[in-house]
Image (cartoon, each protein chain N blue to C red):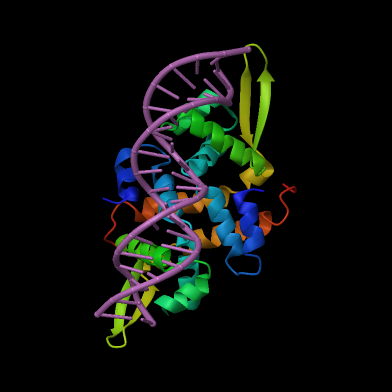
Length: 118
Length: 118
DNA sequence: CGGCATCCACATGGATACTG
DNA sequence: CAGTATCCATGTGGATGCCG
């Protein structure tokens, strides 16, 4: 059972349950960027995605993709054996996160440059 | 220098910089809920907030509030000495997160109940 | 009431090297 | 190319107890 699913059970009934579950889903360091890059640059192969994200180690990228796949947000497809080529793309569910990712990105550009203004 | 600020410097120029910084800000377990509760229930005192969030330890709530205050999202005001009473409220900057929190909450209610549908 | 101090467990991520 | 295996440092939160 995933962490988000545990949360769902545990916080059931609380008004903020859905919120926390979503936060848990997007709370791992690279998840939002991975989704963002897949939204912007379409299906990508492992190393292309790694370059697009820039800064993530293959270990973490691999773990993140597993996690996102388990949550049904990302689809993994082996395009070719020998040499191995794999493509990652967003599922419908994954694409439905666009408004959320957008909201986060927009808030960041509008409010993070100068911490003093309200 | 906060983690989000380090990010700002480090990822400057990357398209997803603002996104990651926002994610870092909201990535700690209780931050989104705290903001949500303050949005919904207005200024709250420490223990009221703790009950509203339900599940946080005072240590973590305290740390989270410090963090949010340092980022200029939450304002702390001592209302009364002896007995000590303190009120926490959102700053304008904090309130500006409403669309983001909303987007997250809405996505959660629409997509987390049944992981199978896309 | 509104915290802080302590201790501890575990989650997470980075670096590096290696493989089919 | 697409990962896995290791090892290690740090982040993060929970439990408990105490204080002004």
